[in-house]
Image (cartoon, rainbow, N blue to C red; front, side, top):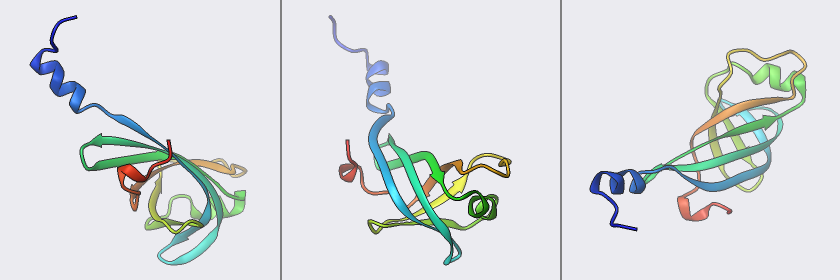
Length: 116
């Protein structure tokens, strides 16, 4: 096998890398007000050096999830001490849903602190 071409080397170095999964329980909040207990599971990725992205699921009792869905300024205070800024990615949620897809845009642990 030959040497990697320079343009391919850039693609390899800049590729997205799975860091692991954050899962656990916590309290979903909006502007500091508790909305209810939640379970979460987020997959984390290094998008580029120094930039981490995560997305996954948030599970709550249906009435509490419905009350949180569509709100801005949501955060998830995890039982292990993180404060994650989250937003739901769907446009609508069925009334009886107990799970919703969410993106985490702030508060993620450093790359070296992810469980693999």
